[in-house]
Length: 366
Image 1 (cartoon, rainbow, N blue to C red):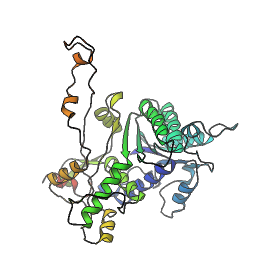
Image 2 (image 1 turned 180 degrees about the vertical axis):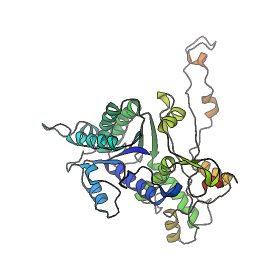
Image 3 (image 1 turned 135 degrees about the vertical axis):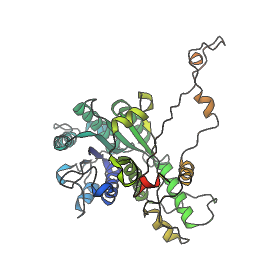
Image 4 (image 1 turned 120 degrees about the vertical axis):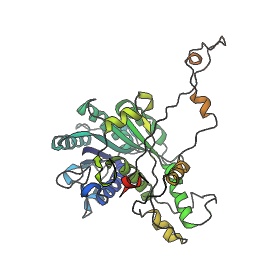
């Protein structure tokens, strides 16, 4: 499957590394690896304003990334959207963007059947937000509207340390809305809360006890792994059919965008994952280890999986049903009241459910 990923900034590259490590370890349908080329290397482009993160990824002996597809500078982008978007003030232009797009074009030419582009980045920093916005525009100009473009954007912590993070996020989201066909948003605060709750469940029998997120043993790598596991469940092929006779069906970004993001006002998606874990233990060390160790897929009753997933999803407010009841006459002020009534907020809800893992197809029949 010729999906090409572009990893921008520290956040995008760390999530991309976790994603490809997950895909490399899990090989359904006869051991075939998806999102990898014929040479066994990942079909992706690494971009960053600094060399530290990309250098660490390339130094790994088992790195799935191509050295010729890694592009970085040493000046950084100063957590400033404008500096990331326009580049340093010099006579050479934004060379990093030109080099990254050249690497992207080479991956397009080597693909047997190009199915779309996935951009991994953060909304917070100057590189992920500013440079990510610029690369999105360049990718759209390169592939046009015939091939889908999906962004995976990570929202910063509400109490972040960067004074410009909210400005960077607003400017970047405007580019995502105009350039991407669909966008998956991950909230650092929400994922931190989920990981802390899972640690509390596995470290104590009293699951009703309030969770102290600040005091929990959750690391940034745990957040990256959660996002990687959720994305792996999306991009890995689904089994169409029953049991072992199922046919692998790769991700179709066209179908995903058409069914879940049919209009410009509904481009932003949430992606949540119920992760199978190893056996729980009462010790804190074992509980922390089980959070970072995925067990083989088990055919737990689907109602239990659904209950666990619904417990992690954000809850709608008590006025949800009222807000969802949209009346065009009220929106136009023709509801009989004689005045211009303010339009009610419209919410669009669509969903898909994937089951991923060994024997997932057979488990679905139970």
